[in-house]
Length: 268
Image 1 (cartoon, helix red, strand yellow):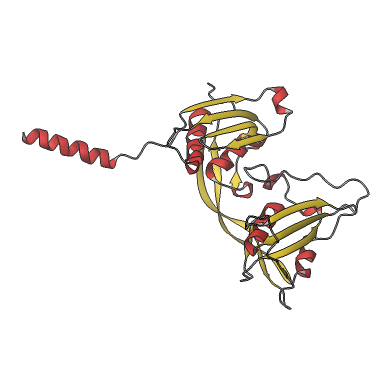
Image 2 (cartoon, helix red, strand yellow):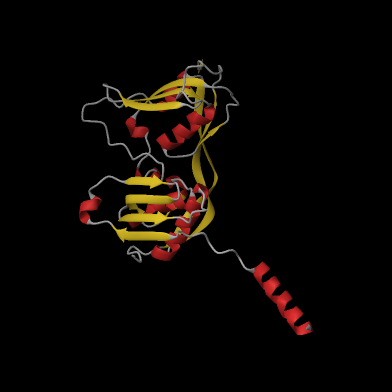
């Protein structure tokens, strides 16, 4: 009796000491894109309960799996060029928040992906008040996307520059948009609350290059302006016209480093 009791306790303590199994998809299909697929546009659909990634890079998948922006990732160049087709179905009780963790497991199993995180000094931009204070237009009740959020639009100007138009946006909307546009983190240090309408002209040459694009929910890098086109107003000048300023800084940020990965995945 005593031996059985001790054995039962040992099993309980052993179970407590075990790590939970990593979340994983119920069914998954992974294969390299064909040459014909490689000419197609990237497409991705997430949820409910599944993902469908068409003609994506491993860089894109890693960014989705770990919630990391391209400027906070480091790895070999082929991660941005080789293309794949990935479709996976989650268990019925899985939530949308579980899907990135399942993608981490899938990448480890099929691509032998190994990563680690470290802190590195990276360039950042602080959005601050100008010396004469803000010159912003407060948003009206009708401004925004009609559902309580902001409306963000970008358009090309005939002169060759670009225009960013934000309706009903907060300062968080502005810095998040600028982060994606410039390809480096922008931090709000204005202390301003409320919603505003912003109009900013900017030069296409200032937009994020290939080192800051290509990840999940990131815009593609913009092509250069056509020959003879004007470069456009600097976004730094446009920010100053709003009574704000962008100040360059450096600070420690987490960086996801790809230690190893297989270019040819374990297919179905």
